[in-house]
Image (cartoon, rainbow, N blue to C red; front, side, top):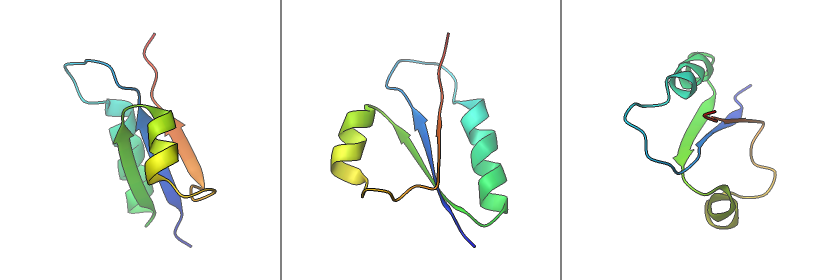
Length: 64
């Protein structure tokens, strides 16, 4: 059964792509899941682009 997976990266400047989120995306895609990657403000994403209760998994990248 395919799941919808959301990968979020906060909107900040960085030189390199988020390796952790890329690895998670590969893992879930190999399992046959639908993966969506979003960089930016979470509130904007939820209000505009995301239907309610649409995601089975949600992973957020943070930088210390």
